[in-house]
Length: 105
Image 1 (cartoon, rainbow, N blue to C red):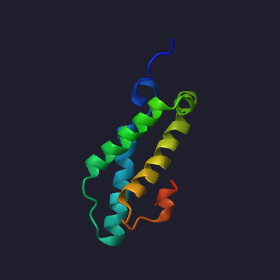
Image 2: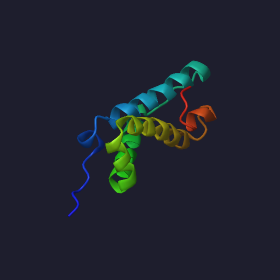
Image 3: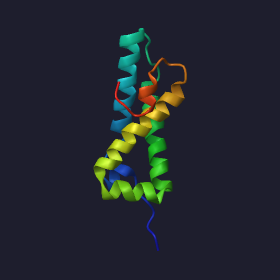
Image 4: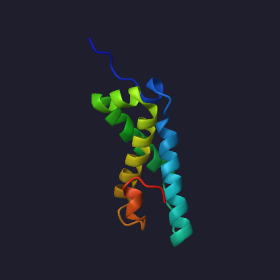
């Protein structure tokens, strides 16, 4: 019998809420510095990203196995995909496309 997957933080050294907060704050700093635009709802955006990561982690045994085998992979995967998800969420935010590709701005 397979045990039910726990949260990312319970099974690894990765804290998705901190990764999400970091990604959102990076985008907020970029938008404010380069366009004078404030990113509203940062906390709810970070929560949405962390929740999405948890759902994928629990639903996808292949992703979960990679996280458990290599924490660096898991952390890098989260940063990359959270940038991608946030870019899609913000649609017309003036973030560069490189942000959506997981690259730092």
